[in-house]
Image 1 (tube, rainbow, N blue to C red):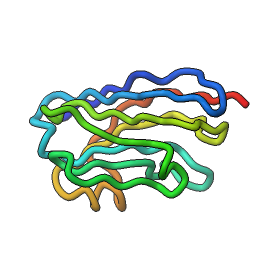
Image 2: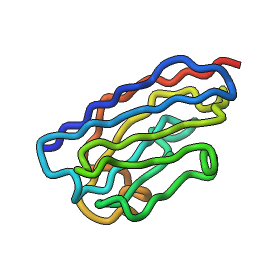
Image 3: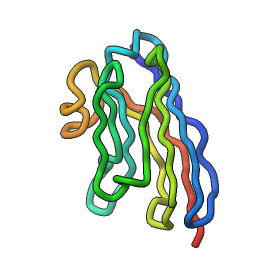
Image 4: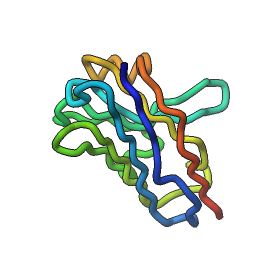
Length: 124
C-alpha cells in the first residue's frame, strides 16, 4: 500500500512562490509516476503536473507551464512542486497522486493513490 502525505502549502501573495512536497511511503516510489492535481470547476480534480518514474519526463498543464517545476529526489520517494509567479487562480487544495507505471496514465486518468492535500492560497 502506498501512502502519500503532502506538505508545504500556505499563503502567498500574487507573484510570489511556494514549494509543496509529497512524501511517499509503503513501496519503492521510484517506480511510480507521481504528480499533482487540484480541484477545478466542473471537475473533481484537474491535472497540474506529473513526473515519470525515475524522473526522466515531466508534463505540465497549460495553466502552470513556465511557472511550475516538478521534480523528485534521487530516491524517488519525495516529489516537489515549485510554484512561481503565483496567481490568485492557483488557490486550491493540491493533491499528490501516484500510479504504478506510465506517467501518461497518471496525466490522463489520475492516480491509484492519493494524498489528503495541502492548501495553497494566493492573495491578490
